[in-house]
Image (cartoon, rainbow, N blue to C red; front, top):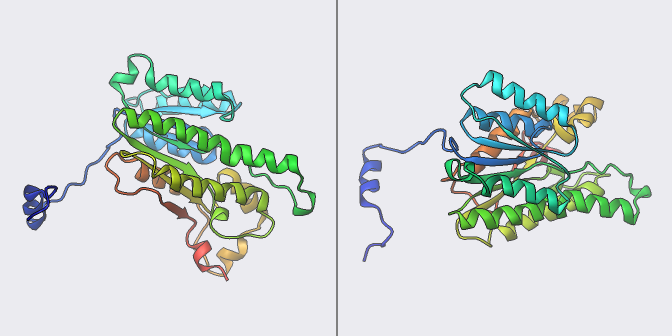
Length: 278
């Protein structure tokens, strides 16, 4: 007895090399980019806006930078929907409420349905092992695990009520491979990776995935790259170059696509550094 899910028309089309490669699948939909004016988030915001999404750009405190990003999108992509800016720390429940009010209240919630969210905010938490104390560890846990996970939970509940969507959490290559001196940052990010796998089991139509950037020239790793910390990996041929904000943006966009067939996974965008370093 054939499967009740078998699509004979699609099977015949594939036999004739007729495949469906949809483009601009986020056009006319709303996507939250928490931390969307930062080094990696800005590239993602621009990419999504360029493709027709209504982007809700979140920032912690640098209003001037967020406004500059919005102005650039409006000037360089005049057909794009003007981004909405949300200010505040993701750890604050009232800030999370403002994000979700923006996707559930008003005419825009119907004309540009909520399709997904990406969560960039975090803290490099660079505290030497010998100087670690309860306060510094708790602060890192709050910014790198608790706040992003609560945001993802709230986003997922709203997405599921609306038919589903995609959530992307941003971790780090240090969350999947040990690096000396990174325990205060890497451990909460590793918890975030594991938490995302659990969230991926919670909903039927909402996917949860993680992007884990490597040594990039934007975002939290920029200062380490600039200092020469990772030069040996390029010198030795472990990676061909350092990562760029665009590399991360394209990975995020891929995982946000509405018909994406990936769930509960971590995509490490590091040029092969964690796989090849000796």
